[in-house]
Image (cartoon, rainbow, N blue to C red):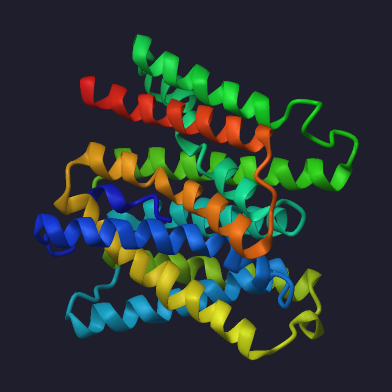
Length: 305
């Protein structure tokens, strides 16, 4: 996932190719939720995040060098490198990986993709944006879905680990929202694709420092399964999907991509149920439907605005 896919400079492709790329991103990002859940059985959260950033950055640096688009960041882009690097690459991944240890992969995907619900009130507070009736309806639907997910009959409020895990996933969504707002107002010198590996490079030493301080390296259990998980998360889910999301966002109408990416948590829930055997409960189903309906209405309200 990237907060900077809204202003890509990747080559524009035809509608058919862009649609295929959109489906590929939805599928790959959706499947990555159970993949990450499995990976965390063999590697602690911060080591996992650091490995993902290292592999993703290396892949994007290589791709940009091959395309002769690799550039040293300009001073004007440093604020967005710092904000995205810290909020989305460090805080987001740290919260997601830690929360995934105790929360089902499908539910985790759904909670993290509530990001637009947090963008709306933040934009009102910071930029004085108005809600409008349609956006208000969407926001209320989304919050209603969250209320369903956290209702006392379907959520273990007395389990401190479950509370912490769910809270961290919502914090990840809020961190992503804050990064999105900065990206929205940033005046780009280089492209988001050119800045992405530098953002990852900024995040890497911070994640490594926390990993070294809190997670013994012996806790990493090398295996072919872990190697496959890391390859999927680095070159594929991070580097390729970032490029594909930038390309799709530039090649298709904004409303198409906004609504299309709502398919990611749906794929995450479905694949987690089929692969990991996670139950699809009435609470999860109703929460999923309300949240996705709310996010769809919020996105449609932007088109009318």
